[in-house]
Image 1 (spheres, rainbow, N blue to C red):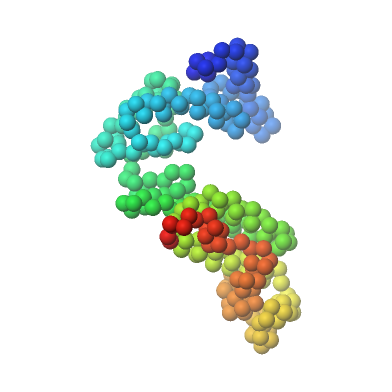
Image 2: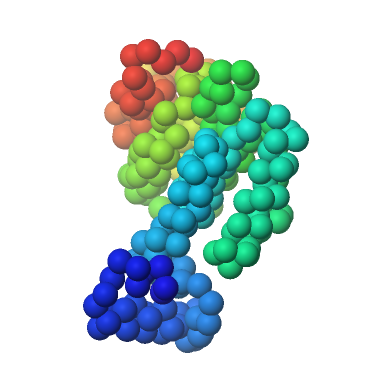
Length: 272
């Protein structure tokens, strides 16, 4: 509040902000007091956090340190481990003594650029190529497994609609990564997940045979696959599934291609 008061002289506005900070938050229907900090998720919290951390930005600029910051997550770059450790100690003291903030020691560390992850991205090799961090890929796959779970009793139209929304948002964020091969592999895996869902939906052999024949699979091959007792995941990779439920047909049903989205988002200079 002292830092807000440097620029804001209106006492009514200052009181309003103070009341906002002390109003408390609802946690599972129960009002909890906010004795320290700003209510997480509140509309004024990012603004107030930036006002406070603006002093940190100016201090790092004064020291001539290259850095990036997104909200309270920031990285400072140094040429050697020794320099990085010295900078980390001094910046920690500044945050603790001057801004009276608590530094998360578990998340704060000195690492080489190859081990560095920031906002879900990783930076590889000497040229710091932008990649999707492995943890982000794992979270993506976990969410896709939820959306394409065989036990979900929803229509394929709704399932594909939910997938489109999620994939568009995910690619809108991670599409700047230079990983065409990764997106191609994820596309293949995603198509197999969808074929598995269709195979589960066509639960009876007669319906499976009819649908495969309708999609252009030879009759003898369609009968053999329809009678198969192998699991859904295995059948999703069979020749009949690939011929009948081919990539073009899945696209017609509304399945987005991550590779195609990447090509639209990628600047011309980027390579895989």
